Structures are given as structure tokens and as C-alpha cells.
Amino acid sequence: MSFHVTPEQLTAYMSDCTLCPRNCHVNRSAGEIGFCGQTSEITAARAALHYWEEPCISGTCGSGAVFFSGCNLQCVFCQNHNIALGKDGRIVSLERLSEIFIGLQERGAANINLVTGSHFIPQIAQALELAKSAGLSIPVVYNTGSYEKVSSLKLLDGLVDIYLPDLKYQSAALSSAYSHAADYFTVAVDAIAEMFRQVGTPVFDNQTGLMKRGIIVRHLLLPGQSADSKHILRYLHEAYGNDVYVSIMNQYTPLPHVASLPELNRTITDTEYEKILAFADRIGIENGFMQEGGTAQESFIPEFNGEGL
Figure 1 (cartoon, rainbow, N blue to C red):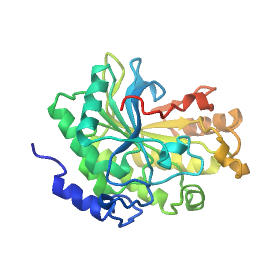
Figure 2 (figure 1 turned 90 degrees about the vertical axis):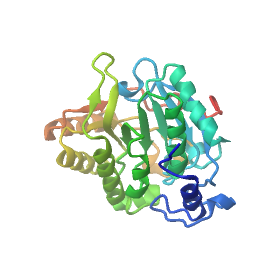
Figure 3 (figure 1 turned 45 degrees about the vertical axis):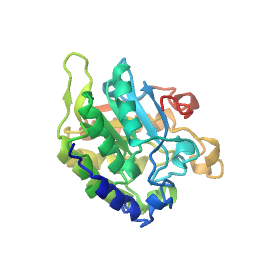
């Protein structure tokens, strides 16, 4: 079959890796690792039905979430800390990854949900094409922190139906302090523009309410950073109006590894969250999701024990 990414191209990508804005230039094929912490071997920590995404993603049957190991942001407050650092995970072959996608479809998954796969984009593209040739027909969701190169995202054009990007910060000071990426906002907004070019305005299944195509931009509130959150929401509304959905999240959970950062060592207050929701309403955001109370707890963070791999 004809791949979006040929084996020769995959070798080139991995032997001098510049897939993401870190531009590490390491030879991942030879076992070298860059910022993401991963070699060229696909590593994942969990593949299972996941029920805690937005309602139009999880539905009642669950989203078929594949959590990849490693990350090109490694935010200091990360809720999936161990897999972001590459501490949890198992090596999965290209063929096995395609089989996992098919298996999740057979279990009734609403979609295939690729979580933090930036550093494996060429391999993911190949595995998706294998799976589609074997009968994969449910939507594919790409779930990302948005620190992505447009050139890399183009490898997924025609393979991904729904993008689920974060827009974490507008402030370069915050993105530098918490995600080691002063250029985060400029990179992320270009990435989201490319995602929008690929999938366009939202399309839903009239019977199930599930999203079939489109973008949901997520913004996780951080303690004490309401001003930055307002900048993010205003940008999204001015850039896209109601052509994208916005998910305003209050689930930030202060895990033990942020104890040394007192400003991050608390949850979001009800008042903080209510004020941001009121702001979103005031500026005209209509297509959005909010979270009910009780999401800021570790029970909402799945176990990364190799299930489904």
C-alpha cells in the first residue's frame, strides 16, 4: 500500500529528529533521545475505553484512548507525570498499534483517541493507514498539548477527523516557567490553525450526538492565572468565533511533584471558575463545555499499567 509516510521517510525523520519545535536533531533510530525522552520505538502506557473526555467524544460507550509515553512539553504540573517522563510504557510495534486500533473499534469505542503522540507522528500515520486498510472506520481523534510543527501535522492530513488540542498559555513567562517553551503560544496558535484547515467546522452524528469531525480546544485553568485564561478565550473567540468548540476545564489536580511550587499547590476555586465561565459567556462564546465539580481528584487520572497493549 502507499503510505502517507514511507519507510524511507520514517528513517529520515528518526535519524535526525526535528518533528517538534524542540528541534533536538538526535538520532532516535540509534537509541538517542531528545526532549520527549523517546527513541524511534513506539512506546505506550495504556489502550482502553476512556469515559472522561467531553460528552461528544466519550459518549456512553467510551473513547478508545491510546496513551503514548513521553512528551515534548513535560509541564511541571502534568497530570500524567510518569508517562510524560517516559517512566511507564511498553514498546509496541507498528503492526501491533494498528491491531490495537481495530481492537478498540471492536469493543465499541466511539473513536480512536491518540493521546500525546507528537513525537510518534510518522509511526502513527503508518499505523492508521494499516488499520484503515483493515477496516478501521470510526473517527480518529488527535489529542495534543499543541506544541506541534505545522509540517508534522500535515502528515496526519486525511487521517485525523477530530483534533483535541490544548491552548495552555498566552503568557511567554508562564509557558517558559511551566513548560520550558517561551514560544508556546505562537507555536500553538499556528498548529491549531493547521488543524482547522484540515478538519473545518464541527460535524456531529444527529442520532448519538458524537462528534464526527471538528476541533475542541481545551483550556485548563491554573491557580491564580485567570488573566491569562481570559487572553486565551478572547483569542479563540476572535480567531474562530463559534467554528470551534472550547472546553474550559477546572480539573487541575495538584499532585505531589508540585509541592515545591506553592502557587500551583492548590485546586481551582469555585469563584475562579465561575468568573471565567461568566467571561466566556460575556464575550460571546456559545459552543463550549464546562466541568461540574469534583473533577480535581486523582481518581480521574487513569492507571498506566499497560492495559490493552
